[in-house]
Image (tube, rainbow, N blue to C red; front, side, top):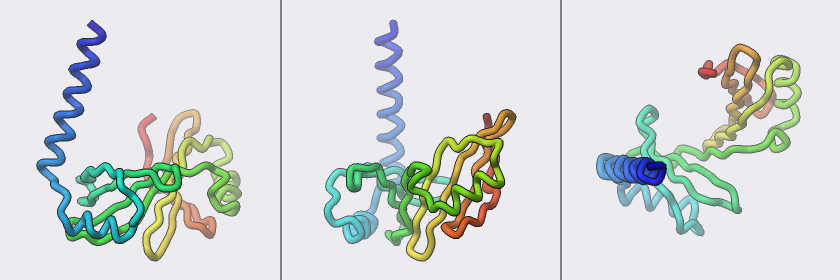
Amino acid sequence: MKKLITLVLILTVALVNTQAKEIYPVSESIKKSFFREFTSINDVSWSFVEERELFKASFLFDGKELNAYFTKEGEFVGTSRYISRHQMPVIVSQQLEKEYSKYVVRTIIEYASKDQTNYFVTIEGKKSALMIKATPSGDLSYFKKIRK
């Protein structure tokens, strides 16, 4: 019975992914833009981020998972990747410790566009979890509350 349930789940996910690719096909201009930015990448997985209306390319870059984002017209928007606390600027870590000392850092996403880099830090306390936006200079701002 477990095998049957697992098989049904796998087939459902495959069907949803196939339908998403048909609804939001990746245009040649988006693919050309991707290969202009990332010339040595061959294995890439595409998805569409509806709430942002962006195409997301997921791939390995220097052995780490990286996501690149493109508009429907093929314009490169930026990249995101998970990083460790040690990869974040020291001043950001210090500010988080100062302002959110009762919270534990769960995940850190580095988002880099052509003109700026930001860090989206998920922190968790006893009663709540938050996502904080941080700049490389250590400025912190509330981004959103996350269901716990």
